[in-house]
Length: 212
Image (cartoon, rainbow, N blue to C red; front, side):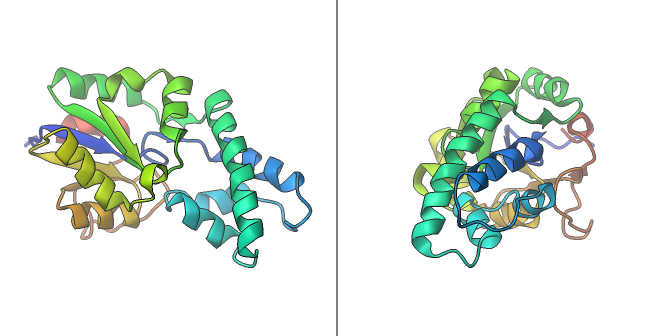
């Protein structure tokens, strides 16, 4: 039996696209421009922290860096990351555009709430050309608020009455619960959740047509 909501709020990385290859190159380019990062940044490193708040990513990848160096390196990565996202981008998950079009045709209003830096959602829009599907978006980089607060902000700003959040990590589930919003788990992303934890789930974006 299809579920009825008035809107769908999406996570970005691991839910709409996978840009970890491009982001890894950006982090490595930043690493090569300084002399205080010893180890290369690998794809596995980036995938392990994808979905975390933007500042937390660097604290987990480089826990031994002094604060001033961490801030400097984060700024370098931010520049390289936005460029990589816009120019090289990521791979939208198969069937995404068709799924978004279906949802709009069914009357759903579509949004993005991500833990990314400021400008990253816009880079996603520019690279993929999918921006016209989304009515609004919010991210961690705007005011450094947790995802749950940004979900609440979207709900309040756009007067949503029955939203659902689609994400791919335990953090997304927790944010949804804190915001009081039902959750759909994207199993194809970067996190793992049991069916008991997240009974509503999709194995590809097109599965939203069955649920919604």
